[in-house]
Length: 405
Image 1 (cartoon, rainbow, N blue to C red):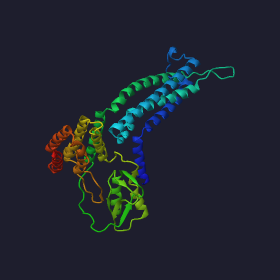
Image 2 (cartoon, one colour):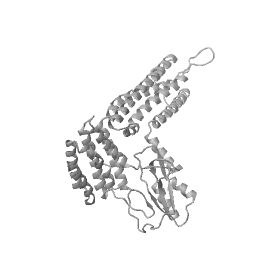
Image 3 (cartoon, rainbow, N blue to C red):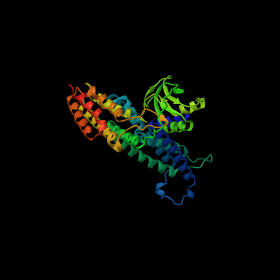
Image 4 (tube, rainbow, N blue to C red):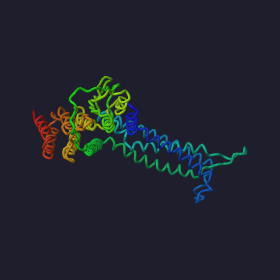
């Protein structure tokens, strides 16, 4: 895994992390504390003055107020963290462990935690600057403006807590989970279709043996690949490059990732440039891998129809989401169809490939449940009616398979 791919992977991991946004808000709280402290020490530079009733707090009162704010906020933060853990545990146990990332990426949870922790840090820093005057020569200093900002942040925290208590039950609502998965999958499919471009495979592909193959060098899942960079490298060096693994595939140290057709030998530096185009990680991610999102919906169907849960209506809702995605993959701007490139070939998702990771994987769970099976047959027939003619055969095969007793 090279530096470029590592940076892309790092950005993806940060986006999916639970810690990044709260950490940024904590830093913002520290900066805000420094700014308001400067304002309190340079009040004469302000173009306005607040009424005396707003800035007449004594040192003892300011210290007590800030201490109460800090203690209360950190206590509430602990409760919020506990609620998040409970929600994540419940969702992973009932809907599948691969859904944990959806809760960790949830911006509502991240903002809520970050606002409370940032307010706690702000109150602690401001509390340190409160000074009592005494005979030793230290003047009394009460950061009046900082105290007003702390009270304002506390009010924001109150509303944040109200929002969070409302938000957590929503995040574990099964309909909300399936709707979010379906929406994200639809967006990925639309983006893939928009980026397909034109078929530029006019020169054909070499028929002789490749001169070089590049292995993964490590084990894990292919998480991302910079295909534009691969095309540039192939064009600059006159190569034909074939990527033999797909995004989301598991590779070992000996797995061939690239094979290259070239007129001259490929140097070590050029090999390193190719390695820098992809990144390997410990698990599959949604980036460039819509099949992974589809399989999360399939997992929800499997769990909903398990004997311990037996919830056919949740399964039907997930099937509806899969049908909506497949409709987009078939009819949006001509449908999902791979485009061949003159210099680069790699596994590309098409409609049959997307369909293969949806309904066929649900079949063994759907067929024994008559309610869900009849619903699946109904939506598949509706999908066949609107799908492109070239896509109807795979749909008919699934209808025939589900119709068998």
